Image (cartoon, rainbow, N blue to C red; front, side, top):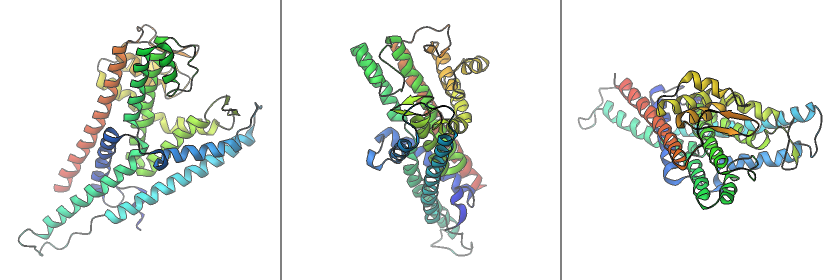
Length: 358
């Protein structure tokens, strides 16, 4: 197997670019049409189970003072699991690209019934690119979760239409914060915040790392994000103390999400129009997280609403309370960002095709 498994562009730039752009389209289309694969076949579920099993053996059951033992043990386990994820993704991608790589073109003098070997080779390459991209897109799809995210947020709004208690119960499926004391406005705010934050975590960031490092990059990001969701807590959760055992996972996710979070905010600002980037930067820094504030602030400014978490942050404090119409418009903005990603992928394909023809 040649070493171009490191990245699809390594040995066949034009072929690899087309495959990657098409793979993004396939992944988004499959997500839209069929949603998530069954749990027993879902790689992210496997990651979660591995993290859960390891975390139960690493994190202590009671609070401790500064504990470097648990910090470094968790870091080593995180690294080992991340390496397994990256290796598995690299092997799958490598096998796929090895089997699907186009054969070298034969001399132009050879001709098949007047079509020419150059034309036949171009058709063969296009078919190989389409097949390879389809399979690569199917492998990428579990790292994305746009349709599921939007469905869960819509379910919160529908539950709020029934009663506040139903809205709270449904929101508890989506967020980790305490929901029992939240009012109607706060439940809706939390759902919109989760929609904005997870637009980065579940869509933009995996695609960003896929573009940068292929399937291994997307898989590593999804692992890091899952680890942060399960381990990255500054206190007790699930009967375990994560202040030190979860610190590495939280910081790793911060690093990998830094640029994608800002890209997500920029995309939201662009599709909404009229959002001041200076104001966006100021609002984004109000949250304790170095990343989640960016897409949430962009959403708050785009909707003209206030998004807050009691005692922690308040984004766009002069905004009004969100309404059901705002929740629907937030969904619309997220769909527009997904469409923008599709257009970017299509543009990349067009440039590749014209570049290969030049």
